[in-house]
Length: 153
Image (cartoon, rainbow, N blue to C red; front, side, top):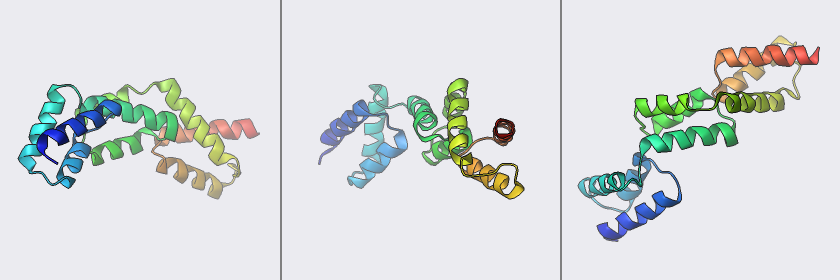
């Protein structure tokens, strides 16, 4: 496939779903073109507003909160792995709707706590570790544990 066809294919992909520079670069490298040609395609996609790491980070963060029940910490790590600039990550995390975030935290916490007795220290620690692995902040987890324990008593 030549460079022009690859550019059109990547523009089509970006038009269908948000992509980040890193993912496009990986796809272009896999297609076997040089780094310089890939960089030119990425610059053209950015210039034509098909590609934006900031837009990608916001969409990624909102989707992970809404559909996957991820916390801010896990989202941050995933965006760092995609080589998104720190400013874009900060902006995306700040743009997360707080009510939706707390609703997601509650939904995940209630589902996890269903089979656990949160008055038992070991089970509370198991719950805590599980919520940490989902990327939620320590203070939010402690708060939801208190809320769930009050509801069960």
